[in-house]
Image 1 (cartoon, rainbow, N blue to C red):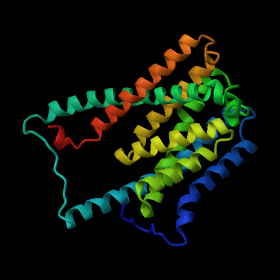
Image 2 (image 1 turned 90 degrees about the vertical axis):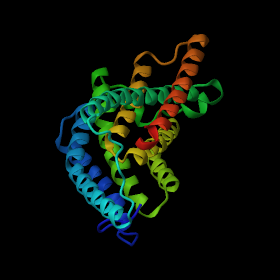
Image 3 (image 1 turned 180 degrees about the horizontal axis):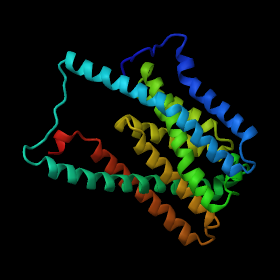
Length: 279
């Protein structure tokens, strides 16, 4: 990715990467001191305020980056053309809306499959004791009322974390790094901010997948949908009382979630093709 605007690989680059996290921490401290007493409301308010403060900076950077990419496209004689059939614009628009809705649903279900598969894999007898000695911060979050778990963990947290980790951190790492190093660094950082071995591994794997999705679409909504699906699946598993003692149900869920991952990957590869190649 070419450098855009004032973003450079110089001494200020670390500042450009980490200042959103310092703002987020400052908001969290202020809300903890001045906000509501219960943890659920405090977290929700902190997430929403951080997103509201940081999102305009993300939008400004995206507009600047888009302008630079369009300029380079023209000057480099690599202007992309859309495959539009004359007279079919409205038909294509209606079909595009339906395809987007279906794609969002598939993205959500794929994320749920990843979440279920990882949760079940970590609970295998061979590794259960090692990974689940300490549930970390997530353990306290699951003590919130179910409706607050859905709002905080399923919606507010993905919204704020995707803006921070993919929209701002990963975006800036791509200025100086190829995709895989940038994805690994951002995923590792995303994992280590979650406490507990299981959460670190879960968030690390999820962070890498989210970086892949963001790299493809360069928008927040696909990674937000994927993150929501993963978190809500974890909430549903925990709300159901964990994993059933029945080995048959356990194996069935593991196989079904694995199949969901395979189908989701195949669908992502289809989406990854250029529009002209699909015509």
